Length: 571
Image (tube, rainbow, N blue to C red):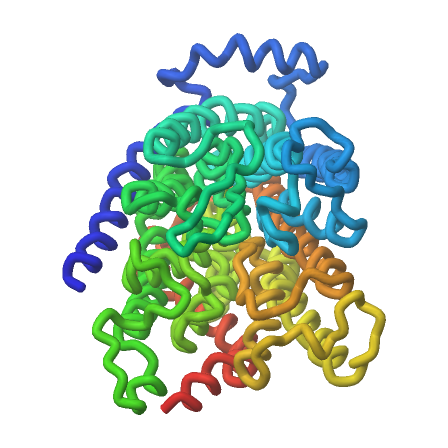
């Protein structure tokens, strides 16, 4: 066990060792300073010229949002059509059929919004064409969208009074050419040399040790897995995701996948400090996020190491911890660490089955997605955190009898209303979805949903409730992992989670950018003796308290009915 824990500590320290210099590099890219990837500039100019885009044209926050929402609408339609028609498109050696309208609706939204909630089996529900030209394309595009939105916030915080916040298309393209593409290429090379397939051939056949004939899917897996983690996407080539031996062959690939999904979200925190020349401020944010991560990961590791008390009461020893649903190659400690990092980062990939985790672990995973701002996904993690900063500054200002101000701008009624609405939106869409599914399960057992509501749950009681809660929480947090005891591949879940994913993705982008744009237009007020300093531990404690209070008040009742009740039932 000491070796397993050492492996987790090493993985996190390696993540930091990469993320800090990467944050400095990201800051230089978006400041327009010279970097070692400037040789990509001619390619970028060609793309802009071909597209008819003036990358030097400054945009205000409304123009940024218009560009972002418009292009995402186009991608949604494109993905939906391709998924329904994939059976008739090339690169389909296994002859997989097109997706139904409701599954294509859910899948197209899922990959568009960086969620990758898969209501289909990876290798049989998609073709090489859609894996490449829909999923992998959206892996890059959705991550770049989040990063571009965050850079708008960077610009709004940096300049004293302005409505010129750079160019969305410039930020978007550079996120791909200067960051996502080169790093994912390096990661894919590592994966390919460690056993991930890169073939375009169809299924291969072999005889197992039991004498069974087994058909194994292949494909250019390494390329997709690289960007699925780097872009905090998470959609697996295979249905088993990174628990599959081709998608995650050994401990080295497991470590690389863990590091890859964390480096950009953490690097963006440091990039904020470098970009604004306020490194202490970024340290405060990093400290709050890291404290939150530790409070989630330590109980999870402890729960998985101690095993299941119900099994222990039967006199059965569990020397290796709770191994149900876990890969022997990785063990309970690494699997526990992965489960928390993938839920706080909003990647949603798995190397073990979350449905098999101990109730305490399930609670921590749910909390990670309910809070949804400890590191978070590419760009959107800090955007979500920004909402809590605004609320914390407002409350702090009221406590000392001053008009709240942040970075020299007064926070007034309009900004706090937007922040409050966005903070309440997250629990609202989760709990409304949970209420609708619970009502339907009980009162519409014969509804025509392709799969009857009564057959949704393979696990009744508290755990079944947790499965439905997890599905909507994962959808709202754009995470994509699931408690897979839930039968979610039907019309009801495809449409309801699709709506939740759309709202959970774009409203938390619109809100912070609107606040940032409004504040950037306000008169700059120099700091005074009464100004609440944003780079102190006191400010960090205030933000953390706001996060805990909002999450606790919003979600504790549902957690009490689900994983917490299940935990006490095992005692």
